[in-house]
Structure formats: structure tokens, C-alpha cells
Length: 449
Ligand code: TRP
Image (cartoon, rainbow, N blue to C red):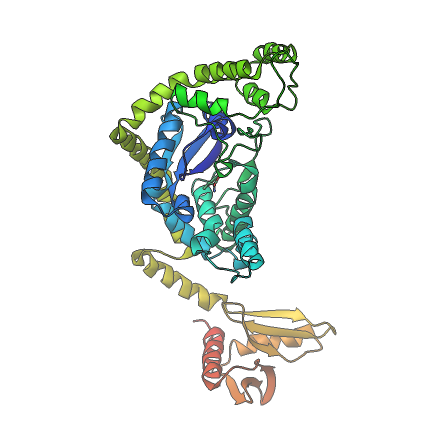
């Protein structure tokens, strides 16, 4: 069975909250269990460095995120789970891609543009505070994706543009170095429509930047306190509550069965007090997360075990990355000199062969031929012949005369047969270039032994 390769990265700057869990972690783990899926999930800790210069926070977040995915049930025998910074092939590929990524393409990246717009608005230099890390963020992300030829990339809407850039960059690389073969598969962003973005305590999207999150693995007590801070309307106990506009109900919905939702809705319509409603939500979440919370605590308490798990994941990922990068280095011309000697020999033979005389019919119907060098540059162009046979004879004779009659003129040269010009070169930059071109003509037209 051909499996679909799914890949996604998690930037390690924060502590996972309930929104991350429902929106990303839970669906990713569900997908990783499918038999027709080969999943790659990784800690994007190089990306984290772009946003955060606090080493303690980076380290803490990597640990917490790794523990979270494992506690939530990711099976690392089935999925490939690793830290980006344990795969040296990724920054190396990033450089190969940087060399083909258009600066103009990256100028259009939303994250970079937003920084520039903000600077301009505040009368600052447009690039104030913008690092090369931020600017090339999408290239590193393209390397993450293309390294493993991932096909489906589950991401939030804000990341769709980056996945499209990975396609653009990969396509360009394929075109330049693939020799008709697809070195990279084309990735596609997937936004899971039914995993609604969870509302936070204040009803806006749950996000660290709004400080409205419910932590995923806090103690029961902290979970209760967070839920107590959910904003509701001011309807009193006994008054019917509107479930449609209630983000408390939306949160409940994300973790309950249809049956539970129906019962809860009825109670709210029937006048259940908001305080009671919060208790129901607490019980629901506490039950859903309780076991995982214990696993999480156990994992966090044994960081050396986590290290081993991640290093094993990195080794698994590198079994793909190392040979593939070798192929890519080969494709761009970073090759061992041992092989290069042979390749150079071959190229030379080919170069002699592939300098070629090409005959063609001009727009006015006359017959001409031209001599092209191996790179396709024109070395000379013949005069116009009114009949094709005469043109053919002239070109044949040029390849059989003992000594070519070539005379320098103006900024090029002319080729003579029987004292008459039969072909002229284009203009060259200087006398040295003319000499090189003349030498190429002699070499190309030398009668074959
Ligand atoms: N930039 C992504 C984010 O902030 C994280 C990420 C890094 C990623 N590399 C990736 C996601 C590759 C998908 C694929 O959400």
C-alpha cells in the first residue's frame, strides 16, 4: 500500500494549551494511527530561535512539547518524532534551497511583511528589528517539508502561504537540478475544517498572545481556576441560557459526545446556573485529560528518557534524510572528486561532439547554417544561400579542409572559402575572447580521424 506522508512541526516557544490540543495534537495523533499514513511530527526548535532569545524558555518548551505529544498517545514506533535541530541535513538543505529561493518571493511572506508594515507605520526603518532568520523563515520550513518529501501538511491558516512557498521553491529546484525527474514531491497544506479553533476564556480564539488559554496539563486545581475565569453573560441561575453564543458551550462541545452535548444544552436552556455549567465542563475535561496528565508528569520527571526517545526518532528520520541529501548534493554539483574525474572526462568528449553545425531556413526562404558551441552559444553564422544544396556543400567543406581560412575583422572574425566570406562571427568583448572563439571553431570543425 502506498502511504500518504503527513508532516508537521510545532514551534517550541510555549507550553501547549487546550487549543493546541484540540486543533493540532489530537487530530495529528488520530491521523498517525491510520494504516495508510506515514507521519512525521517534529519540534521546530530552529524556528523557535527566530522568535525567542531566552535559552531557558526554549529548553523548557522543547521538553514540555515532547512530553505532551507522548502523553497524549503518540506511538513513536509508528510515527517519526524528532527535534529539527537533531537533523543536520535540514539546515544543509535549507542552504541549497536558499540559493534558488527568489528574494522577491520571500518579500511577500506575511510574517515579514507584517513587521515591515508595522515599522513603516511607526516611522522606523522598514527592516528595523527584522533578522535574516525571520526573513528566511519560509525557506527553513520548506527544507523541513521537502527533506522528507511530505505530501500533506496539516497547519493553521497562517501557515498556508509558507507551504505554498515550499512548493514554489521545490518546483524551482526540481526544474534546475532534477533533469526531468521530480527530486521533491509537491506538498499540500491541509486545514482540518472540522477541528474548530477553540475559543479562549474571553471568547476570542484561544491563543497565548491573548492570554486567554486553558493550560493542557495543569493540576486539577489550576484547571478549575482557569475554567472559573471563563466569561459568560450575566443571566442568573434559573434563567434560560443561550447555547449558541456561549463559548463555554463551544468548549464543552469540543470534548463531548453528541449525547452529552444534547443533555448539556437542555440543562442550559432549562436554567442551569453558569457556576454549575463550569463544574460540568471541569468534570468533562478532567476526565478526558486526567490519565494523560499523569503520563505527562511521569515523562517530565524523566528527561533523560525523553532524550533517548527523541534521539531514536532523529536516527529514524536521518535514515531517510542522509541518503536523500547525498542525492541532492550530487544533483547541484557537490560531488566527490573521485567521481568528478570521470565525469569531467565524459563532459569533455561530449563538449567536442556537441559543438554542432545547424542548418536552417531563414525567414526570407534562404538557407543558412550556424555553428553552436557546447553551451549553445553561436560561434558563427553563414551567409544566406539561395539553394539548400549549396549551403550543405559549404558546411561540409568547412569540416574537411586541411586548414580553415579564418580572418579577424572588427570585433569578431570571418570564415573564408575560396577567398570569399562564407560565415561571420558575432561581436566579442575583446581580442582574447575572439581568440578563444576561433580556437573553438577550429576544434569543432577539425576533420575527424
Ligand atoms: N511554522 C510552523 C508554525 O509556526 C511550524 C513549522 C515549522 C512547520 N516547520 C514546519 C509546520 C513544517 C509544518 C511543516 O506553526
